[in-house]
Each structure stands twice: as C-alpha cells, then as structure tokens.
Amino acid sequence: QVHLVESGGGLVQAGGSLRLSCVASVRTFGNYAVGWFRQAPGKEREFVAGINWSGSSTYYANSVKGRFTTSRDNAKSTGYLQMNSLKPEDTAVYYCAAGPQVQEMDYWGQGTQVTVSS
Image (cartoon, rainbow, N blue to C red; front, side):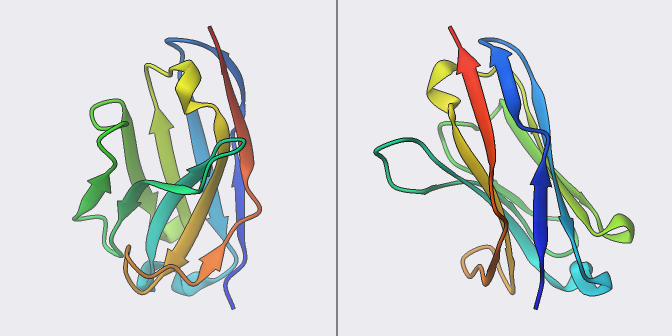
C-alpha cells in the first residue's frame, strides 16, 4: 500500500506559479510511475502530467504543455508538478497518483486545491 500526500496548492493570480509536491510513504517510490490529475467543479477528472519511474520520460496534456513540468526525486520519495503561467481555467483540485505505469494508477492522494484568480 502506498500512501500519497499532496501539498503546495493555494490561491494565485493569473500568470503566477505554484509547485505541488507529492510525498509517498514508501521507500520503493522509485518503482512507481507518478501521475498528476485534476478535477474542476462539475467536470470529470482529467490527466495533467505523468512521469515514469526513472524520470526519463514525461507526458503532458495539451492544455498544460509548455507551462507545467513534472519531476521526481526518488531519494526523497517525492514527485513534483511545477505550474507556471497559470490561468483561471487551471482552477481545480489536483491529485497525484502512483502505479506501475502512467496509464495505470493504483494509489491516489487526497488532493490539493489550486485556485487561479483573474
């Protein structure tokens, strides 16, 4: 069982930046791919970004490509989502997840709220 805890959300003005962190409860964090997802009110959860176990491959939704960057530090059992040039439409609860591959997430965090004001 992998327990994930996100942090770093908050309120920011459009054009600003935030960095989300996702800390895992296991030392075998390096065995898992990490995904970032978000869910806005009234909308379905959507994929935002993903990174493979080693960090050598990253994946992004078209809506965030060029603005968001995902990375990881396996020694710290932590994944990151750097969000720049934030837009009001980025407002959502952001979740990190872990699993054997980006397309297969088995464990989910509790989510952190990101609100972007115009």
